[in-house]
Image (cartoon, rainbow, N blue to C red; front, side, top):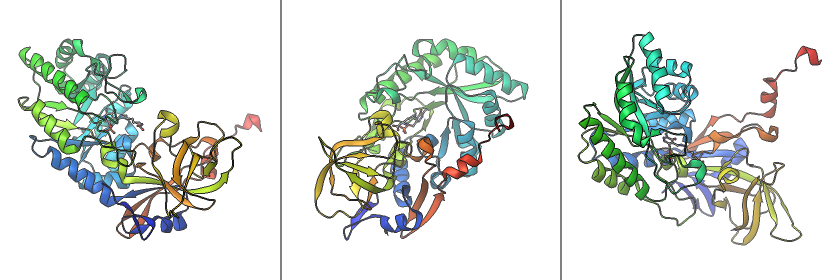
Length: 420
Ligand code: LLP
């Protein structure tokens, strides 16, 4: 459910025609709908309301725009961060330190210090080595860092290999079979307060089954830790719920997810934590683009060349991901086309042989479901700068990230004197 719908033949974001945004801000531009963000946050919250003290930490990596984070903060969400940069954003958005969870396999000492300075609620430690380092840093400051130990449950999430995180060969978490031993060792360190376990097996999950398998394994570990005399008060179940990228696709709902979690965790007697990203912001954003030209091909469908490219929306090039592509003002005819950007490599292809609204030069169109892992994964490849971001609220909008022009990037570069 989202608020990008046709009214009088024109695609709107809430009450605003997308053509009005293109006219005022130019293209390409990411457009987010505040009402959709709020609705998704509220549906997710409601789905977990029956669980004791669920703490929801929005996975900032999905969409770190400050205005988006502000919506999350107003909905009472904390943040799951994976870098000092994301931590700073969460604080800028007004999220209290105690609502912030710091994940990631490569936390650097200065990032650990930044987390301790901010009084974050929890470090999700991904290795024994990291735990020992954090303990030393915290102890030297006379602090105890609250921690969960991330476990690699060796469960196949059934998603794209590049976004699967819970198989034994993936870099994340500690090996399932060594959890008890590592937890006990870390719990003895003066600088740490071990309070629980964390798990996240991957992203864009189409089925709840691998999650249920992983959570069940986590429940077994919880029992083992307690039997060994350890204290476990928090269990972090990560994110991962998938969203439809094609009209008509059906995915598990937050309600079904919440019911499954309730069933698996009913005897845990811990506080539960969640790190949703895509399910909150994915369908709350589109990438609005203009057709530069339609180029005939000698032996196949024409190329619809749009002004957005793989540097603006990397998912199709990186994961072969599908994004629905719709004209802002469809004229009723259809065409089969390859949709490509201007970048000089064949990977800059959004779709091949796709049945789409008929388009010609100057027409506007959107890539849907671009609100998660869209703008945040952009680069300036081919010296294209960075796309602007806009948030719509009813019939008004605000630019929530300025377009960064190529000249602003070259401004930050220097030719050393010895080359002049
Ligand atoms: N927690 C942790 C520890 C994570 O690594 C992630 C995502 C999440 C939570 C949020 O997962 P979500 O609810 O969004 O599935 N760039 C890829 C997705 C990478 C996901 C990385 N980790 C894509 O565009 O599909």
